[in-house]
Image (cartoon, rainbow, N blue to C red; front, side, top):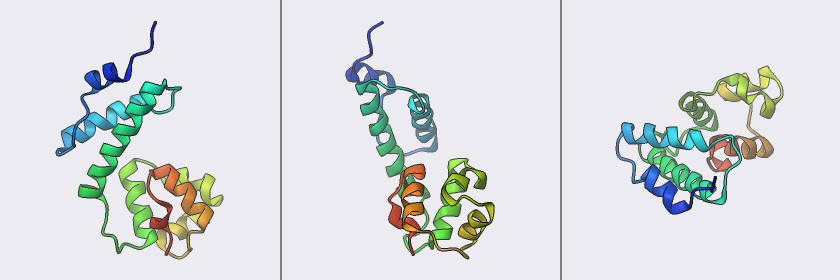
Length: 129
């Protein structure tokens, strides 16, 4: 079976500027289908496009204010991503450190911020005070 071309994938996915939650859910679902699998070059291009569209929507509709603390940003992203504090253990290494970072009692270090940025697809600076 021949891998689908980028043009074919675009025709199937019909990516567009996201204005509604229904569009958001549809694009997120399509992105989820591409996540966690080996992708062709065309699928990787589509994945990046969908991620950009979703990130844009999040920034316009869902992201907290720019003056949010790192802890508030982490809480928000955790809640809206469907992840749990347990998913942060590989980054913070201890449950108490996860809890302290979420409550603002522990500063988030540079390496932790980089790893959180990768996890949530945001710039690491949002986790640095």
